Image 1: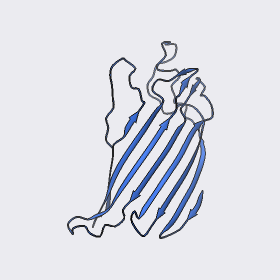
Image 2: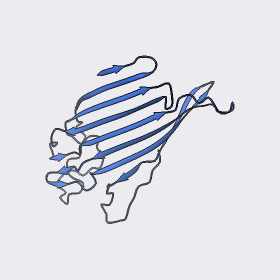
Image 3: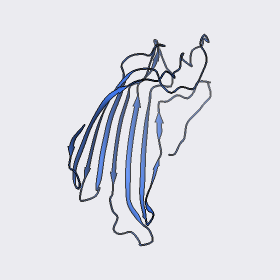
Image 4: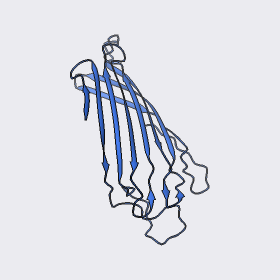
Amino acid sequence: FLALNAGKGPGSRLFLGGGIVIPSNNMLAQSPYSDVDSHEHRHFYLSDGAYKIFSELQYFQKRMKYPVFWGMVLNVEKPLGANKYDFMPSTSYGFSVMALSGPLNKTPKNIKLGSIGLSLSIQHYTEAKWGDIITPNSKSTMISPGISFMINSSAGSFGINLQKPKIDNLSFNDGGIEQNSEQWQ
C-alpha cells in the first residue's frame, strides 16, 4: 500500500506491505541433526514447509541536498505454526538503511561517476525447532555494510555494489571441526 508519495521530485514515499507465505511441498521430512534414520535422507529443500505471515514498512526520501536519496526498510516474517513434520521455523527480522549521494559535479571529465551510495542491512533469525529440540544453526544475525558506485556512460548507467556480510551466532559446526565463513558480495 502506497501511503505517501511525493510523486516526481523531492519528498517522502511510504510503503506498507504484508501478506501470507504459502510453503512448497519440497521440504525436509526430518531434522538433519537427528540420529534416527527412519525417513528418506536429503539435504536439498526449497521450503521449510510452514505457513507464515510477513509485514514490511519502507520509507524513502528524495532531497535537494546530500544525501539526495535515502531510505529504510523494516520487515518481519513469522511462522503461523510448525510444518507437518513438527518443524517450527525461525522468525526473521530485517532492517536496512541506505543513502545515495546523487550527482557528483566535481568529478574529472574522464571519470563519469554518477553517485556513491552507502548501505547497512541487519537480518536476525530466532531459534528454530524440530519438536522440542532447538536446531543448532538456526539463531543468527547477519550484518552487511555496503558501498555502491553508479557509473554513467554513453551506453547507459551501470552500478557496482560491494557488501561484506558478517554472520554472528551461526554455528556451522556439526562435525566437531572448527569452521567459519568469509564472504564478499
